[in-house]
Length: 422
Image (cartoon, rainbow, N blue to C red):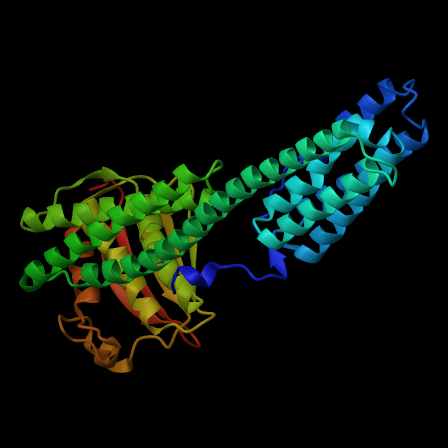
């Protein structure tokens, strides 16, 4: 996908400003008309009724605009014609070329300029000039002063339309760039999730060199996500919450990648300290969130509140959840569900990762978990994921097992002792 993908169609626009300047301006002119009601140039109360019509029309237009992300340009055209017609009637009822209300023509000119489309701007400005000429230059002889005033007003119209049109074009370019970059961020997030899950499943000592290179590559991608999301937020007046969440998710990914790299550098040593289990489960789910959405799979969490800390090596336990979620996600189709659960049973924390996929093969259940003992080579598996997870859990003093649900689905279960219980 390239930048041209985001150009807008003629029939509708998402670039239109959702400000209330028309209503504010109309209210101001209504108040002004009321205070000038004694002027001999003004036909009162007819001019006040016309102002109220202009206010009502612009209020209705803004109400429709606020409820839609995109708006038909034909609706904009109707509103422009409506404004020009009412404003021309106001001028005819307030002294013609002597009326101070000629500035109201800036309303449709500004509205057209904010669409960022030259045909709307040109036609609206031309109609306003024509209407101003009809209301200001009568069939009788035209004075030099009238001509000078007419061309001065014409210059104001052209200059105002040019300035607002250029501002609108700059805004459209920025929004198109932001939209394009947001699309790039989504693609990069999906790539990072895929590469990160594969890198973490390749955790054997013989693969340290290749895994380290992959980790460094993914870390660079994560930094790119943070930088691009930050750039989008800087360009927007009100940052999108999704962009902020992407930065947070990318930062969590970066921390997990760095922790994994440090564990490798230290020779895969285990450094135990009391820590909660819930953040590790949530981080693993966050890493696979994009990949799961892409496959139409849901990841559900069921963690008992108030679980005590576990004395553990957090980077290693993180790998257990990543390996098991990746294993489930590999075999699930659209509509599948992965459930992560953790409850306390006495001095143990009982953890389970369940899915509703095809389940484990019978040979694997009979033989048990062994290194490189996968029966899923056609899916790219090595058998190391479950084997490494089992070793990690056992080094934490826990027990690791696998079974199938009925009628289908795989279940990975393990227990971990509560900190201070052993």
